[in-house]
Length: 175
Image 1 (cartoon, one colour):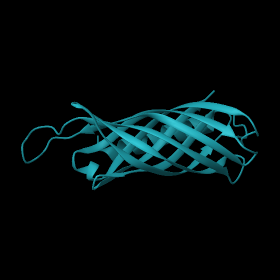
Image 2: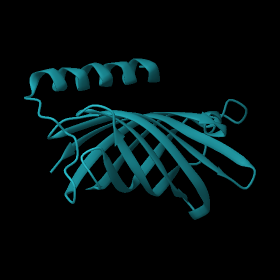
Image 3: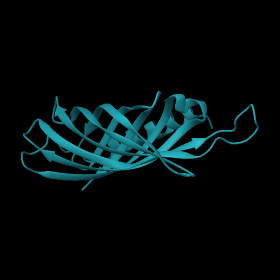
Image 4: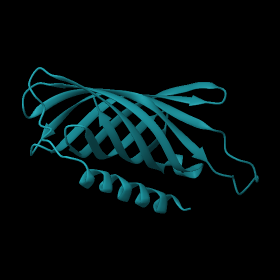
């Protein structure tokens, strides 16, 4: 299946989950902690698009409510880029991944819809060990209820003359 078909199917399944669960307002409560585990499907962009057309990852996020409208976030996890065959050599590109470590904010416009912004570093991991650290910037637009958090976001990795990113969908379950 093509990547766009996979992402569309995942989005439809995620939307079905939203409408079949009981929804509670998410607006963060001041001085409260919330932990979520998320699955991230994404489409690589920039130079990452040369060797990969799909990425899958998992993230853990800790959210601290500053007020009923704003929250601080700390997120980490791992993204794996599924590599393709190099048409010039007939061999698969080297496998690689990124370990993001980022901090950010979430601003809720309504009790369930938020804008998020995170910054940090992305540590590259290859078959041969760890690669360079990259600056990471990530804006997001999301929907959250008491137990679910779904966000579309873009991750931009920059450093050492290379810029690439991920257009991603994060589906998370909160505890």
